[in-house]
Image 1 (cartoon, rainbow, N blue to C red):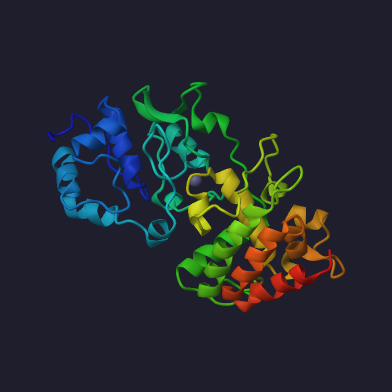
Image 2 (image 1 turned 90 degrees about the vertical axis):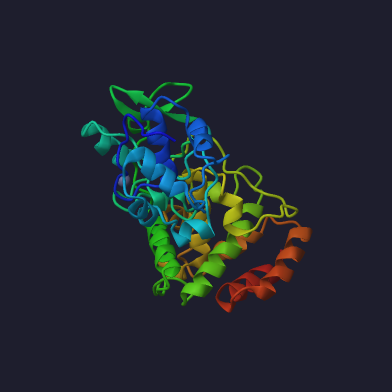
Length: 328
Ligand SMILES: [Zn+2]
Protein backbone atom coordinates (compact mmCIF):
# COMPACT_ATOMS: atom_id res chain seq x y z
CA UNK A 1 0.00 0.00 0.00
CA UNK A 2 1.50 3.40 -0.96
CA UNK A 3 1.87 6.31 1.48
CA UNK A 4 -1.43 7.95 2.26
CA UNK A 5 -1.76 11.64 1.37
CA UNK A 6 -3.21 12.31 4.82
CA UNK A 7 -2.74 10.07 7.85
CA UNK A 8 -4.15 11.19 11.21
CA UNK A 9 -2.30 9.81 14.25
CA UNK A 10 -4.05 7.43 16.65
CA UNK A 11 -5.78 9.18 19.56
CA UNK A 12 -4.92 8.26 23.15
CA UNK A 13 -6.68 4.97 23.94
CA UNK A 14 -8.15 4.60 20.46
CA UNK A 15 -9.02 1.16 19.05
CA UNK A 16 -7.34 -0.18 15.90
CA UNK A 17 -10.58 -0.51 13.92
CA UNK A 18 -11.48 3.10 14.81
CA UNK A 19 -8.12 4.42 13.62
CA UNK A 20 -8.29 2.44 10.38
CA UNK A 21 -11.82 3.74 9.76
CA UNK A 22 -10.49 7.30 10.19
CA UNK A 23 -7.57 6.65 7.82
CA UNK A 24 -10.09 5.36 5.28
CA UNK A 25 -12.49 8.30 5.71
CA UNK A 26 -9.73 10.89 5.25
CA UNK A 27 -8.58 9.16 2.07
CA UNK A 28 -12.06 8.79 0.58
CA UNK A 29 -12.32 5.00 0.64
CA UNK A 30 -14.70 2.83 2.66
CA UNK A 31 -13.32 1.04 5.71
CA UNK A 32 -14.20 -2.28 4.02
CA UNK A 33 -12.10 -1.41 0.97
CA UNK A 34 -9.28 -0.14 3.16
CA UNK A 35 -9.14 -3.44 5.08
CA UNK A 36 -9.14 -5.44 1.87
CA UNK A 37 -6.31 -3.22 0.62
CA UNK A 38 -4.42 -4.38 3.72
CA UNK A 39 -5.10 -7.98 2.70
CA UNK A 40 -7.78 -8.59 5.36
CA UNK A 41 -11.32 -9.59 4.45
CA UNK A 42 -12.61 -8.15 7.75
CA UNK A 43 -11.20 -5.83 10.44
CA UNK A 44 -8.42 -7.64 12.29
CA UNK A 45 -8.28 -5.84 15.60
CA UNK A 46 -8.51 -8.87 17.91
CA UNK A 47 -5.68 -10.86 16.37
CA UNK A 48 -3.76 -8.54 14.02
CA UNK A 49 -1.86 -10.64 11.47
CA UNK A 50 1.93 -10.44 11.19
CA UNK A 51 2.82 -7.70 8.81
CA UNK A 52 -0.32 -5.60 9.30
CA UNK A 53 1.55 -3.00 11.32
CA UNK A 54 4.43 -2.92 8.82
CA UNK A 55 1.91 -2.12 6.08
CA UNK A 56 0.22 0.52 8.24
CA UNK A 57 3.62 1.95 9.11
CA UNK A 58 4.56 2.21 5.44
CA UNK A 59 1.38 4.03 4.51
CA UNK A 60 1.27 6.35 7.54
CA UNK A 61 5.01 6.90 8.17
CA UNK A 62 4.52 5.96 11.84
CA UNK A 63 6.79 3.48 13.64
CA UNK A 64 5.58 -0.12 13.21
CA UNK A 65 6.68 -1.27 16.67
CA UNK A 66 5.03 1.70 18.33
CA UNK A 67 1.82 0.90 16.46
CA UNK A 68 2.11 -2.79 17.44
CA UNK A 69 2.46 -1.84 21.12
CA UNK A 70 -0.23 0.84 20.97
CA UNK A 71 -2.85 -1.45 19.43
CA UNK A 72 -2.05 -4.67 21.34
CA UNK A 73 -5.56 -6.05 21.99
CA UNK A 74 -6.77 -5.75 25.57
CA UNK A 75 -7.31 -9.13 27.35
CA UNK A 76 -10.81 -7.97 28.47
CA UNK A 77 -11.74 -7.36 24.83
CA UNK A 78 -10.34 -10.67 23.60
CA UNK A 79 -12.28 -12.49 26.35
CA UNK A 80 -15.60 -10.77 25.57
CA UNK A 81 -15.45 -8.99 22.20
CA UNK A 82 -18.32 -7.01 20.73
CA UNK A 83 -19.42 -7.73 17.19
CA UNK A 84 -18.40 -5.18 14.55
CA UNK A 85 -20.82 -2.37 13.88
CA UNK A 86 -22.16 -2.05 10.35
CA UNK A 87 -21.41 -0.24 8.14
CA UNK A 88 -18.58 1.48 10.05
CA UNK A 89 -16.47 -1.71 10.51
CA UNK A 90 -15.57 -0.60 14.03
CA UNK A 91 -15.55 -2.76 17.13
CA UNK A 92 -16.72 -0.82 20.16
CA UNK A 93 -19.09 2.00 20.99
CA UNK A 94 -18.66 5.76 20.97
CA UNK A 95 -18.63 8.07 23.97
CA UNK A 96 -20.79 11.07 22.99
CA UNK A 97 -18.77 13.29 25.36
CA UNK A 98 -15.38 12.18 23.92
CA UNK A 99 -16.74 12.76 20.39
CA UNK A 100 -18.09 16.17 21.32
CA UNK A 101 -14.74 17.16 22.91
CA UNK A 102 -12.90 16.02 19.79
CA UNK A 103 -15.30 17.92 17.52
CA UNK A 104 -14.82 21.07 19.63
CA UNK A 105 -11.10 20.83 18.83
CA UNK A 106 -12.01 20.27 15.14
CA UNK A 107 -10.78 16.69 15.51
CA UNK A 108 -12.24 13.37 14.43
CA UNK A 109 -14.85 11.33 16.25
CA UNK A 110 -13.28 8.08 17.46
CA UNK A 111 -13.91 4.94 19.52
CA UNK A 112 -11.74 3.81 22.42
CA UNK A 113 -10.18 0.35 22.47
CA UNK A 114 -11.68 -0.38 25.91
CA UNK A 115 -15.24 0.06 24.59
CA UNK A 116 -14.79 -3.03 22.37
CA UNK A 117 -15.32 -5.31 25.39
CA UNK A 118 -18.94 -6.33 25.83
CA UNK A 119 -18.49 -5.80 29.61
CA UNK A 120 -18.15 -2.01 29.04
CA UNK A 121 -21.18 0.26 28.70
CA UNK A 122 -19.85 3.59 30.03
CA UNK A 123 -16.88 5.76 29.09
CA UNK A 124 -14.10 5.26 31.71
CA UNK A 125 -13.30 8.99 31.53
CA UNK A 126 -16.75 10.63 31.41
CA UNK A 127 -18.86 7.79 32.92
CA UNK A 128 -21.65 8.51 30.46
CA UNK A 129 -23.51 5.86 28.48
CA UNK A 130 -21.70 4.71 25.35
CA UNK A 131 -23.58 4.94 22.06
CA UNK A 132 -23.85 1.95 19.70
CA UNK A 133 -22.53 2.51 16.17
CA UNK A 134 -24.86 0.33 14.13
CA UNK A 135 -26.33 2.43 11.34
CA UNK A 136 -23.57 5.04 11.65
CA UNK A 137 -20.94 5.80 9.05
CA UNK A 138 -17.72 7.75 9.57
CA UNK A 139 -17.90 10.61 7.07
CA UNK A 140 -15.87 13.76 6.45
CA UNK A 141 -17.56 16.99 7.50
CA UNK A 142 -15.56 20.22 7.26
CA UNK A 143 -12.32 18.23 7.16
CA UNK A 144 -13.00 16.05 10.21
CA UNK A 145 -14.39 12.51 10.39
CA UNK A 146 -17.75 12.34 12.18
CA UNK A 147 -20.10 9.52 13.10
CA UNK A 148 -23.21 10.33 11.10
CA UNK A 149 -26.40 8.31 11.15
CA UNK A 150 -27.17 6.89 7.72
CA UNK A 151 -30.88 7.64 7.97
CA UNK A 152 -31.03 10.99 9.72
CA UNK A 153 -27.57 12.41 8.77
CA UNK A 154 -27.20 13.70 12.34
CA UNK A 155 -23.93 13.19 14.18
CA UNK A 156 -23.45 11.19 17.36
CA UNK A 157 -22.59 14.02 19.73
CA UNK A 158 -25.69 15.91 18.63
CA UNK A 159 -28.27 13.15 19.08
CA UNK A 160 -27.14 11.07 22.02
CA UNK A 161 -27.88 12.52 25.40
CA UNK A 162 -24.71 11.95 27.37
CA UNK A 163 -26.48 10.49 30.41
CA UNK A 164 -24.77 8.95 33.43
CA UNK A 165 -26.02 5.43 34.25
CA UNK A 166 -27.40 4.70 37.76
CA UNK A 167 -24.60 4.69 40.35
CA UNK A 168 -25.37 1.06 41.22
CA UNK A 169 -24.83 -0.02 37.60
CA UNK A 170 -21.57 1.95 37.41
CA UNK A 171 -20.45 0.27 40.66
CA UNK A 172 -21.06 -3.09 39.00
CA UNK A 173 -18.97 -2.06 35.97
CA UNK A 174 -16.18 -0.94 38.33
CA UNK A 175 -16.33 -4.28 40.18
CA UNK A 176 -16.13 -6.10 36.83
CA UNK A 177 -13.07 -4.12 35.79
CA UNK A 178 -11.42 -4.85 39.16
CA UNK A 179 -12.22 -8.57 38.79
CA UNK A 180 -10.87 -8.62 35.22
CA UNK A 181 -7.57 -7.22 36.50
CA UNK A 182 -7.42 -9.83 39.28
CA UNK A 183 -8.54 -7.64 42.19
CA UNK A 184 -11.37 -8.51 44.63
CA UNK A 185 -14.70 -7.06 43.44
CA UNK A 186 -15.47 -5.35 46.78
CA UNK A 187 -17.46 -6.03 49.97
CA UNK A 188 -20.90 -5.11 48.57
CA UNK A 189 -20.97 -8.14 46.24
CA UNK A 190 -21.82 -11.75 47.12
CA UNK A 191 -18.83 -13.22 45.20
CA UNK A 192 -15.65 -12.45 47.16
CA UNK A 193 -12.94 -13.32 44.63
CA UNK A 194 -12.27 -12.05 41.10
CA UNK A 195 -12.81 -15.56 39.68
CA UNK A 196 -16.16 -16.19 41.42
CA UNK A 197 -17.35 -12.70 40.49
CA UNK A 198 -16.66 -13.28 36.78
CA UNK A 199 -18.08 -16.82 36.78
CA UNK A 200 -21.22 -15.65 38.62
CA UNK A 201 -21.81 -12.61 36.40
CA UNK A 202 -21.31 -14.73 33.27
CA UNK A 203 -23.66 -17.47 34.49
CA UNK A 204 -26.41 -15.02 35.39
CA UNK A 205 -26.48 -13.28 31.99
CA UNK A 206 -28.41 -16.12 30.41
CA UNK A 207 -30.72 -16.55 33.39
CA UNK A 208 -31.62 -12.87 33.20
CA UNK A 209 -32.29 -13.26 29.47
CA UNK A 210 -34.45 -16.35 29.98
CA UNK A 211 -37.17 -14.59 31.91
CA UNK A 212 -39.75 -13.88 29.22
CA UNK A 213 -42.08 -11.60 31.20
CA UNK A 214 -45.67 -11.16 30.13
CA UNK A 215 -45.12 -7.48 29.33
CA UNK A 216 -41.44 -6.66 29.76
CA UNK A 217 -38.33 -8.78 30.24
CA UNK A 218 -36.45 -8.78 33.55
CA UNK A 219 -33.57 -6.75 32.10
CA UNK A 220 -35.88 -4.18 30.51
CA UNK A 221 -37.31 -3.32 33.93
CA UNK A 222 -33.95 -1.65 34.57
CA UNK A 223 -34.11 0.52 31.46
CA UNK A 224 -33.12 4.09 32.22
CA UNK A 225 -34.06 5.51 28.83
CA UNK A 226 -37.66 4.28 28.53
CA UNK A 227 -38.47 4.98 24.92
CA UNK A 228 -40.64 1.94 24.45
CA UNK A 229 -38.35 -0.55 22.72
CA UNK A 230 -37.98 -3.72 24.76
CA UNK A 231 -34.84 -5.59 25.71
CA UNK A 232 -34.52 -8.93 23.95
CA UNK A 233 -34.87 -12.31 25.65
CA UNK A 234 -33.59 -15.76 24.64
CA UNK A 235 -34.94 -19.31 24.66
CA UNK A 236 -33.35 -22.20 26.54
CA UNK A 237 -32.26 -23.72 23.23
CA UNK A 238 -29.91 -20.79 22.51
CA UNK A 239 -26.47 -22.38 22.39
CA UNK A 240 -24.51 -19.24 23.18
CA UNK A 241 -23.41 -18.57 26.74
CA UNK A 242 -22.44 -15.59 28.88
CA UNK A 243 -21.09 -12.50 27.17
CA UNK A 244 -21.41 -14.13 23.72
CA UNK A 245 -25.16 -13.53 24.12
CA UNK A 246 -24.46 -9.80 24.34
CA UNK A 247 -21.79 -9.50 21.63
CA UNK A 248 -24.12 -8.01 19.01
CA UNK A 249 -26.25 -5.92 21.39
CA UNK A 250 -25.91 -2.17 21.86
CA UNK A 251 -24.66 -0.59 25.08
CA UNK A 252 -28.18 0.15 26.30
CA UNK A 253 -29.39 -3.46 26.22
CA UNK A 254 -26.12 -4.71 27.70
CA UNK A 255 -26.39 -2.13 30.48
CA UNK A 256 -29.94 -3.27 31.30
CA UNK A 257 -28.84 -6.91 31.48
CA UNK A 258 -25.90 -6.01 33.71
CA UNK A 259 -28.13 -3.94 36.02
CA UNK A 260 -30.34 -7.01 36.47
CA UNK A 261 -27.30 -9.25 37.03
CA UNK A 262 -25.92 -6.72 39.52
CA UNK A 263 -29.12 -6.91 41.56
CA UNK A 264 -28.68 -10.66 41.89
CA UNK A 265 -25.01 -10.31 42.87
CA UNK A 266 -25.35 -7.55 45.48
CA UNK A 267 -25.84 -8.00 49.20
CA UNK A 268 -29.50 -7.15 50.03
CA UNK A 269 -28.51 -3.91 51.76
CA UNK A 270 -26.39 -2.85 48.76
CA UNK A 271 -29.15 -2.92 46.13
CA UNK A 272 -29.53 0.76 45.45
CA UNK A 273 -30.69 0.71 41.82
CA UNK A 274 -33.93 2.74 41.53
CA UNK A 275 -35.75 -0.37 40.26
CA UNK A 276 -34.60 -2.41 43.29
CA UNK A 277 -36.06 0.28 45.50
CA UNK A 278 -39.38 0.14 43.61
CA UNK A 279 -39.43 -3.65 44.10
CA UNK A 280 -38.56 -3.24 47.83
CA UNK A 281 -35.68 -5.69 47.48
CA UNK A 282 -33.91 -3.91 50.33
CA UNK A 283 -36.75 -5.09 52.60
CA UNK A 284 -35.67 -8.32 54.37
CA UNK A 285 -39.27 -9.62 54.12
CA UNK A 286 -39.57 -9.17 50.35
CA UNK A 287 -39.01 -12.33 48.29
CA UNK A 288 -35.99 -10.70 46.61
CA UNK A 289 -34.61 -10.62 43.09
CA UNK A 290 -33.80 -14.33 42.73
CA UNK A 291 -37.45 -15.23 43.33
CA UNK A 292 -38.51 -12.44 40.98
CA UNK A 293 -36.06 -13.52 38.27
CA UNK A 294 -37.21 -17.14 38.35
CA UNK A 295 -40.95 -16.86 38.96
CA UNK A 296 -41.95 -16.69 35.30
CA UNK A 297 -39.67 -19.53 34.18
CA UNK A 298 -41.60 -22.60 33.02
CA UNK A 299 -40.90 -26.11 34.33
CA UNK A 300 -38.44 -26.87 31.55
CA UNK A 301 -36.34 -23.77 32.26
CA UNK A 302 -36.50 -24.46 36.01
CA UNK A 303 -35.21 -27.99 35.42
CA UNK A 304 -32.34 -26.70 33.25
CA UNK A 305 -31.55 -24.08 35.89
CA UNK A 306 -31.60 -26.65 38.75
CA UNK A 307 -29.15 -28.75 36.78
CA UNK A 308 -26.92 -25.83 35.84
CA UNK A 309 -26.64 -24.27 39.28
CA UNK A 310 -24.74 -27.30 40.56
CA UNK A 311 -21.71 -25.84 38.78
CA UNK A 312 -22.27 -22.33 40.16
CA UNK A 313 -20.24 -20.84 43.03
CA UNK A 314 -22.03 -21.23 46.38
CA UNK A 315 -22.58 -17.47 46.73
CA UNK A 316 -25.18 -17.53 43.94
CA UNK A 317 -26.14 -21.23 43.97
CA UNK A 318 -27.48 -21.01 47.54
CA UNK A 319 -29.90 -18.08 47.05
CA UNK A 320 -30.88 -19.48 43.63
CA UNK A 321 -31.68 -22.92 45.07
CA UNK A 322 -33.66 -21.32 47.90
CA UNK A 323 -35.67 -19.29 45.37
CA UNK A 324 -36.38 -22.35 43.21
CA UNK A 325 -37.57 -24.37 46.22
CA UNK A 326 -40.18 -21.79 47.22
CA UNK A 327 -43.70 -23.10 46.71
CA UNK A 328 -45.37 -21.45 43.71
ZN1 LIG B 1 -15.80 9.87 27.10
